[in-house]
Amino acid sequence: MENKKRSSFTGSIGFVLAAAGSAVGLGNIWRFPYLAAKDNGGVFILCYIILALTFGFALLTTEVAIGRKTKQSPLTAYKKINKKFGGIGTLATLIPVIILPYYCTIGGWVLKYFFTFISGKGIDAAADGYFTGYITQQWQPVICMIVFLAFTSFIVFSGVNKGIENLSKVLMPVLLVLVIGISVYSLTLSHTDSNGTLRTGIDGLKIYLTPDFTGMTFKDFLVTFMDAMGQLFFSISVSMGIMVAYGSYVNDKTDLMKSINQIEIFDTIVALLAGLMIVPAVFVFMGKDGMSAGPGLMFISLPKVFADMGKIGTIIGILFFLMVIFAAITSSVSVMEAIVSSIMDRFNFTRKKSTILVLIYTLVFGIIVCLGYNLLYFEVKLPNGSIGQILDVFDYLSNNIMMPLVAFLTSILIGWIAKPKYIIDEVTKNGEKFARKSIYIVMIKFAVPVLIFALLMQAVGIF
Image 1: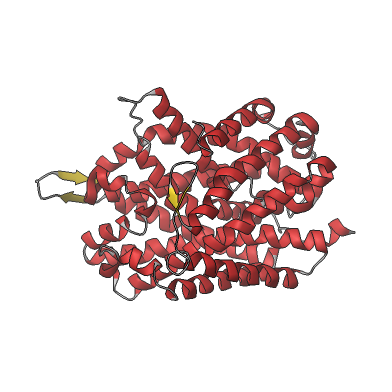
Image 2: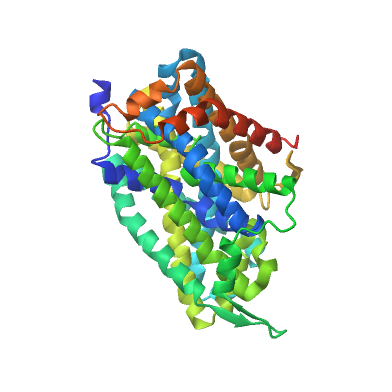
């Protein structure tokens, strides 16, 4: 009876768009271009694509299949596979619990920039110190965070079909059109600097896409490879309970492999387009130095680029931050849904009650994250060598430690305890072909545990 009462996507298109919406978030729009610029452009992209087709594919297939087979959210799904491994579900559920407050905070930053550009004050956002001046304010970031959280909560409150699926069917096509449009425009740009050097969008494209191994040591390559692997967690939303939750809403008649392939393709295209949209434009106006601006690329470097474009820059800025809002909302909805569905399954609460509980919790901790840049400001050195505040500590714990740990334990559970056949049988239950079955078995049993272990060692500063 429990399975029959469970909500589900109306079809494979709804599932694919919702899952792709989760995957295409701030990690793709913000983090992917920065890492691609930092890690020799094409070398990073080459590593990313190879890992997406192997490592990412294995984790994505595993989590979606676990969700559909158990018809449970992450908190309770792993226990149904093996009672001794139920702790994976607890850990996987804690990750979105940690992520949601700071994700909504960053979503609030995006809203602020969108309102700035739409009010015709985009030039202000290009001023030095604008971003720092904004996040160190006490209440404006809190207000923007609350607006973003309210919209996210409303969608989750509306349910799987009327909320998540309907949102994805509208926003994802619009988002894709915006990304393609801005990417094409980025390639048409050109600029002559004070030294008389002409830089074009096509020059930036070559730097972005062409693998450059010149002077690259083996250690440099390992860093690039690890960065690409770490990015996959963001890009395909694995190891944070989301794909297990979404998989639990997938109809038993849906061709899982076809849907997973579509999610992979959609996500990889948008990730590459995000870099295509940002890297050439930043290169044209700021050169290679601007491309290595770090995570501040979106909030510090890009507004300067839009300002240099003149009047058209305001329009491009509006469209860009509108697109980022869409990407952020579809992802924050999936993060909240992973928590809400777990509460519903574990405690038999209604969706309404579960959503309100998560809303209250996120509001409290979202305010704490916002105040981490003023009233609650502190600096702490993290094991990976970076200096962070509250948001950075949350981000480090969830993304550098807990997500790889969930992936490692999941690969042990499926690769060696329940065996790969557990997933293969679910994927092929309607007679579908599993074209990459051999790759899947090798990855989940051997490659994933080894690679994840290496990633964890890097995260804690061992190498």
